[in-house]
Image (cartoon, rainbow, N blue to C red; front, side, top):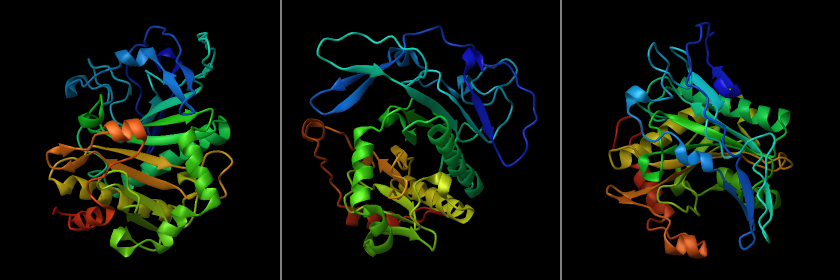
Length: 344
């Protein structure tokens, strides 16, 4: 790709079409960097170049759609199944980095890699409308990138995720997600991994969780509302077998999780009869926790009613305590009342 960025295509069939022209590279920009927040004990990333990233173009100008004569995009092919490429506006980078000197504040290179994962060549739709085979391929892609970035490139923590909906700040409508690979383990991920190492929390939820909180289950996987949900209608998916990440799933587990993932998103979309804005994360083991970590796919919705959004307001931001208006048991009951194959 222009600028030396890497592009990877994944699919069930062989891709032989020749590439077309792609969008030109961005002009050089200052590299992002990290500053340590001494009061909360976490790093903050500063990446000024992201301020100029593409913002809500119409479909004709979408950079994630397949390329065509007279239209440039990030993916220089007329068709594809799933495409992965290095983010044009990264918050983490590899290579030389000139750090600012800030008296009394520790700084560090924002070392890592940011990738964009395009789920489909189709500009419309999303995880709830993709066929099971495409969702299974996506889970395989998450696993392949996790393995490459953690085991081969040596990053300490890899986070696949999807931001969905303008309500949470999405800047491109085309169905896509991202992958961030960190050179360190962020504090929140470290705390969760250490908690699982001390007590098999996720495994116990999968094996012995309250039936009233379960949405779908079979011999290979389960979807449920966690009893400690921080968002209304929060939904988790996990394989029954404790595996550290999607790279360790069997083909049967992958297919089952794919089926449950589609159903989970359709339940959320059917709840209020319109697409649910959410943040989806794939929580896999940080380096060093592979033997004790039980992977999850976690969906945090941002709509608590048909015309009401869930905001992180004063108590959440100021005290770190989440206020949830809908108890998990009630949320699970309402989600189970939605037919994921046909509506409410």
